Length: 283
Ligand code: SPD
Image (cartoon, rainbow, N blue to C red; front, side, top):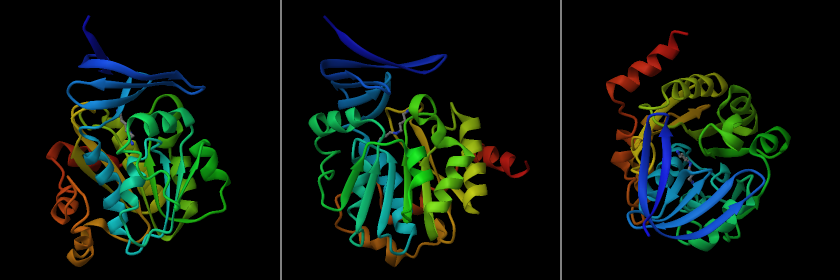
């Protein structure tokens, strides 16, 4: 019998990949957590039937969401990751030698459990002594914490289910309050092919909350359209002006996507994305 996993990418489009075996399946209070072994992408984590990460292409997303803000800040010591229970973002953040503590706020402990068991490379740094994993709601955490962070990374799922509040202005304003005075926020902001208004509102809201915003992108084959964006807000530091000397600290790290040139080129946007962002500036 043939087994296939299908994600409905939008109302008109599906992506389907062959499954060899189901490795983990649980219904948590928040969502359905599934890990399958696929023929094309290796082990793959899906939440409510939406692909979150796969062994084959996780490096693109995790290197970009972590290293672009972490290099932009001159000395990131305290980092908060919201979502990201698979551990891939934490793994990349810890490559920065000055990092003293990483708080991982992942609402769903089933995601962490499944990833520890079936995504061993992605989750490999979750037990690092600098890491504290908290299974609490990111929105609530941001409202209630007294901690301040140099970098906050919003490694959320899509704007449906438990992740929906993580894309709104009140949340970004809350993050601005718990950032240090030169702090940086980055969020995953979906595909400009299929989710244009979401990208526009994130760009506009992050700009309002932090003062300045930039969009950058990479290619994640298992996400809708493959073309994936991240939006960074920074109170002080400009990601495009980071000195080559700073970017060169990544030499010798185990990286497959991020390089000093990629850091800069990721901010070069196709014309249609530039136009989308320009539209928001006039509002
Ligand atoms: N369409 C899926 C987008 C998922 C983005 N977050 C993935 C989390 C990986 N750490």
